[in-house]
Length: 141
Image (cartoon, rainbow, N blue to C red):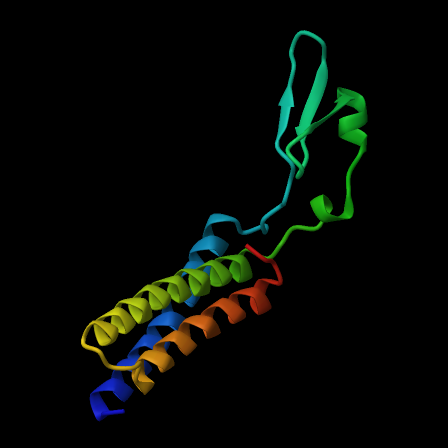
């Protein structure tokens, strides 16, 4: 790799860290108490029943009093907003670097050349962003 490519990789890594930190701070400023996960609930005004969408695409009906008393541990404990924002920043930067690596690879292949170390390093930086996104927030998007 040339000196320019090494500097470019360092700039990309610093940019990834800056994006993660700034999105983490933004999410923390937006939700200072944390992010409370919930299931969307639609209330039927005529019958007083609530319908919650489950993860399989179906619906589960219960009365309004049952829906209010049924709380899970996940909905009580808010998630850290900073780690959520940082995770989203790392995911976004990883996706951007994946697109950049794909573009560089297409350019190399159009010239009839194999992928060089710089392209592999950019792809590795993208994969690092994906992995760190999962490790920081422990949530698969």
